[in-house]
Image (tube, rainbow, N blue to C red):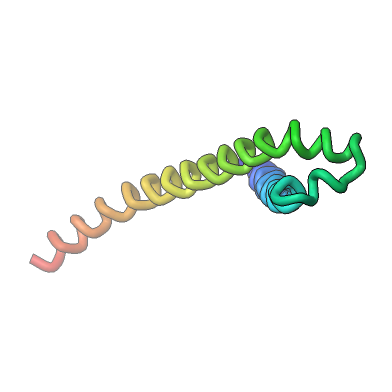
Length: 88
């Protein structure tokens, strides 16, 4: 993947994690009862979707890292075999 895509994905991941922390804090306890009705409705309706988006972004990062390690691992193994054969 290109570098701008990584930066955009990193920005969206951080933004969704921060938003989910803020929304969970706002929705838990009695804070929702004393909040402005419009803002409270926005928080109560969208906090689950923001949490799901955060989890999806984290899973995407895990998949990207696993894929890059797999590709890197495939490149390293033949070199190790060649080095082991050269030592024999």
